[in-house]
Amino acid sequence: MGEYLNRLVNGWRASKRKSGVYLFDADYPFYDGPKGKHFVLYTSLKDYIQSDEFGTDDTRLHIGLTPQPYFGDLHRATIFLLMMNPGLSAADYYAERNEDCRTALLKNLCQDYEGSDEYPFLFLDPNFAWHAGFDYWHSRLRGVARGLQDAKFSSSYTKCLSHLAKRVACLQLVPYHSVSFKSDTLIRGQDILVSTQAVRNFAEQELTAKAKRGEALVFIMRRKRDWALSANRIYDKHINRQAYPHGDYVEKMVKWLLSF
Image 1 (tube, one colour):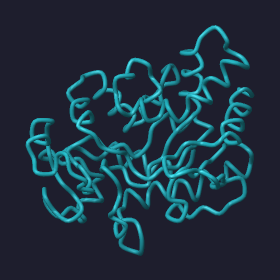
Image 2: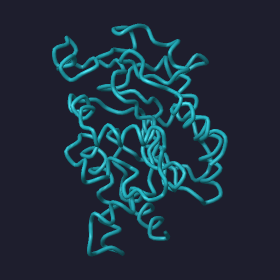
Image 3: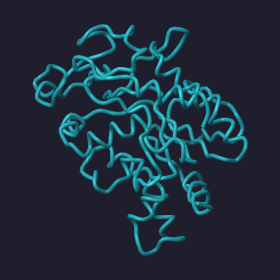
């Protein structure tokens, strides 16, 4: 990949958790305090479940959790799924206490992959089948994995998941967790989150070029308007609000993956 991917990943590598807050360094000017208009800070499961927000539909962004701007090996992936932002449940706070999960999240954030990882898209790793992220992504990509199994890997479903996990990646327009996303002012107009602009620049400048050259499949799963990609071979139609790919898209993914 080129300069825009390098800027995106290097920006996250340089960003560190500060006093419980985990933000892209250049996003700090947007931070309006631990209980501000757009952000809320809890540093543990206990803090969250004892808060007034627990069990409500509060839509602020949780910046005590490890950000998830992307999943998967961005250098090796050839299928890219463009989403809005990571969801939120109490399980996300619980997962931060699990050493293996926390290590995998940080490895993903820094893109510390060397080509030997079996499940770089960590939420397709059966070892994290207990995580809400696995439930979410496995339910949406199970049809692709089963399609691979039927066509090529009939002896092992986990082998199919691994093949898929090495070739698929997700980009999030906003990297911070929330129950749902209502902070549109952070991603529209001229004064937007720098992390949002960084991932959007990567999609606009590099992914669209790869798609045009036939080197990648790019699917806009959420927020077509805000990704604002109009290039040929960017698939953006008939994805429902829950981001389940329909049959044609599943078929495209399976056919594509069988070529590797």
